[in-house]
Length: 400
Image (cartoon, rainbow, N blue to C red; front, side):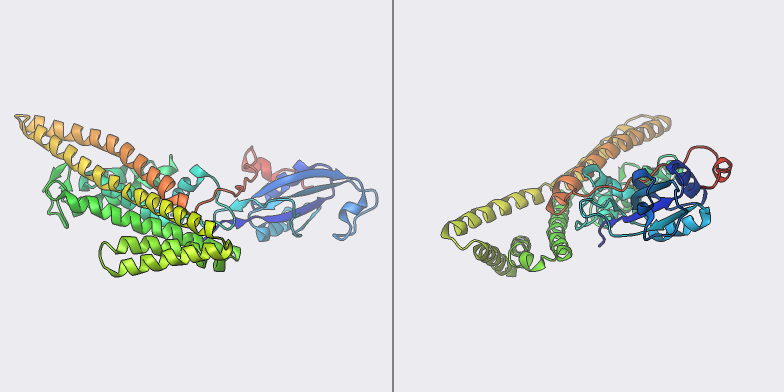
């Protein structure tokens, strides 16, 4: 599990009053991304004392800000041959360092979910890596069809360079194809392939129950991530003495449906939660307040868990819509009519279901999963845009 990384603070002292010329020189050298905070000309030698000896009476530009890669910035300063020095002191205490999400390219499309809410704080989990599995699973479960899933994959692959976010469609299409085999649906014809698990229309109850179990596991994971964040903040002991009890209570309630030991775990979790609150605030009134808060939180989280049943409900709706289309196509009266209706109907289902499944997946991720641990308190690193003009023009910029 990863968290956002703070950008590095830098100071550049350049023997010129033209700060923009320094930026052009760095761009020509292929510099690391930088976010300037200030570009101040300084006539006094005091601005560069401790950095280097410069001729008396020189005009200097002092540039401060943030960089995504301190090593690359230092290296490109060497390549640029600019009359400038770069230094990496400690950032001023009054400034909040911008944060950078450092995910591999195959995870980056899933950063959009976090960015819809805001930049996670420095000690907040970046959930993008988890969503590589979570989001396609929910989308594919609601959109289970072999042929339609393959169509989504092809559309995503064909247009992902023009619209990079369509890489999400590739992942969702792969999941939809897999669940098409699970549910035995291909081209809106149930039974076209033998189901690996169950036909939703013949046995709907398991189709509704599995997403609830999945949602319970996902919400429990969200609570567990608060423990990881408490560890990063150096407050793990406080989390173990209180909030860990509610996590144990929730898991125990879920397990009690399958095994009686869940009741024991739930009771232990409730005791940890209540005793932890009493230690923090040793009053009788606080005990009753903690008990009421515990019951309220438990009821709320159980309702949130049940909201994942919508994933199964939309899987059934998809199966019903596909079945209706297959029946209409069979009544077309000719092979041509059958093919036209089936083709047009599948296209319509793809358009409708992409919208519906995407909206429901986004809603569950943002309003059920993220609310357990995600705090958008960070500030995103916003580097300077690439310089305008051709590469040849940039290379011919006079060195500072």
